[in-house]
Amino acid sequence: MPLTRRTFLKSSAWTAAVLSTSSVPKSIAQTERSRTSAATQGAASIALVDTNVHLFEWPFRRLKYARTSDLAEKLRHHGVRQAWAGTFEGLLFKDLGAVNARLAEECRREGNGFFIPIGSINPMWPDWAEDVERCHNIHRMPGIRLHPGYHGYALDHPEFSRLLRLATRYGLLVQIALGLEDPRVQHPLIKAPNINPQPLVALLKDVPDARVQLLNSWQWTRQAPARPLLAMRNVTFDIAELEGVGAVGRILDGKHWYYGGQVPLERLLFGSHAPYFPVEATLLRMFESPLSFPQMQAIMETNARRLIARA
Image 1 (cartoon, rainbow, N blue to C red):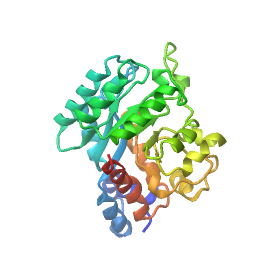
Image 2: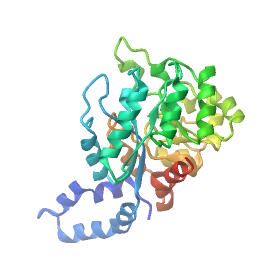
Image 3: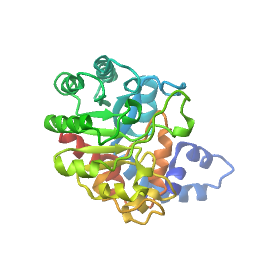
Image 4: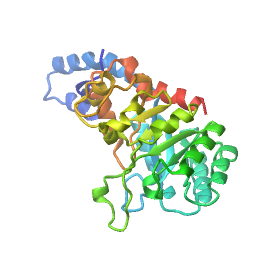
């Protein structure tokens, strides 16, 4: 049975409470529960992996789930069993070695492997290669996360090419956050433009073993020069900023209104961009598309576990 937005909403806690009230005939409540039971049981069996979260304080305003324990509780409440965690401190802090050490310790403190630390690297700083080495050899991180908009470089910069090659040699997944917020709402002293991924098209042909995940990337698939990335097997995408009703199903079918091209199922991953975005928004994005259970399981769990297993 396809899992739809209607199915999800009817099976949520608040709907169950409404259906349990005396104002709803028992026959209607029983019919709705039986209609969704198979689908919700299937959804509950997915060990959801969120590939795009950040820990600690967003520099520009207070977020509700900035505390690690609060974020973990929120994610677990919605069925997340593993979250790949970068750190907001990686945006503006200069000492990324200390930033990554704190991230690794915070993830260990949460315990049970719930948060998987993803280190921050700035190839514009001196000794960035040592930061990559520490992420791999000391902190045993499976990947690194880049924020080129905040660190002041484009993806055709020679140092980025060096970084990609070094990370590939270590077997690290490279997550590239093409943006974190709409530039129109940024602090007036901060100029952190969304980054064009088009230079990756040529670079990834030269580094075919690289594994790149583009985060918050969908506005760029509207641009024809970047569309070849949709067909490259070593590039995956999260769905945090995928817009439009039924967008996940439409991008799988190649029928989205303004995102060009078709993305194979095995290259879409669940990513919420929490706590900047509410995790519920990405869950609804999944459930409002008429996806089959195998499709949903691939996006929400299997693809991520396969990708990180290669690290």
